[in-house]
Length: 411
Image 1: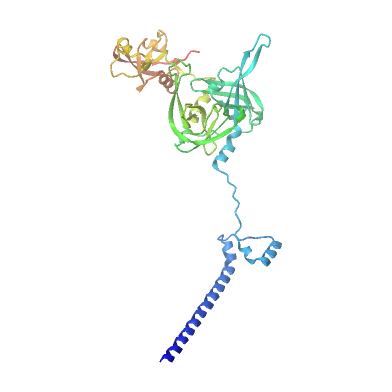
Image 2 (image 1 turned 60 degrees about the vertical axis):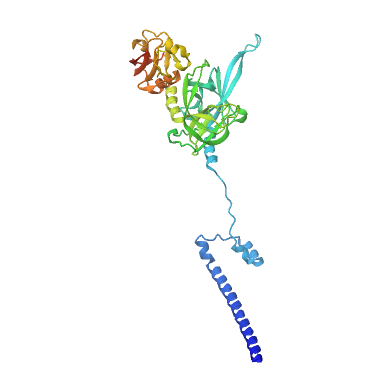
């Protein structure tokens, strides 16, 4: 039994070994057959686009196959040229952004006489070319008090410019130059379609022509900002500027330059930034839809024709509280409005309607008017000479209304 058992044990081991050998042979055979199937189907897979096969020249194919047949199965390395939307947008508009140079006259001494002196540099956007002329949008404050204007083209060449129209309150001006050397005109977009968070690209000349056509990128931070403007620096706001807010870097010299969307369309004219210690990324641009309306009138008439009320407004909030009761006799619920501080002309629109000095205007056509800036803005954006407006005001503690027929503002 022991001998039998030993023989059986050996026999079983041999039988197991034979089984393993058969298994190895079967695996090898399967691998060879599988490899042949893959080789035979490679052309079909390649033609179907599943595998990108190397197709070397005949000479290289022969030598490669001889040295290493597997090399012909490697996929071709892909070379990718990155063209971002920002790059394409900048290419589309950058040559339509120019420098605007403000030149004044000064007299250094009695011998040398008057001399031209550069007073400042800003930016502008070429938006139109026709009749041999090119037209440029820029900010009013870029050209303010200029005796002469020059435009620096993308080529570096400078040409003389003339002002077709300008408006201090809207902070816009339109310039005209010889169009023979202008190659690119910017496409004006639609600022009403903008969304907070979408890309915004600023192009201009920060700190002057040394950094001409600098590009910065950010996003649209807000669509509805109203910035008070004290234009005569008397401590009282004269105007409220409706602007887009962006965190794209805007610096002195960017004024009048382009704020561009990812399609390369101008969606705003860069106009100002908040410069305070600890404040970053607060830049503002005039929405291009507002700009279009104003630019057309500036080109046609040279200025904006504002409806004229005939009053000199003064913010109630700037009046000492003592006078609210003692002089103006206002009810306690009146907390804002516009005081008429001038003697109202008898034949002015306000005078004809019966308004007087020290009346406090609180509404126009039912819209609250809290400041003189809002009053001017309402008349500019909503009324034309010849229109009528209903004015709600307080006099001697009583609330009154008057219908005023507006005229054209005097020169």
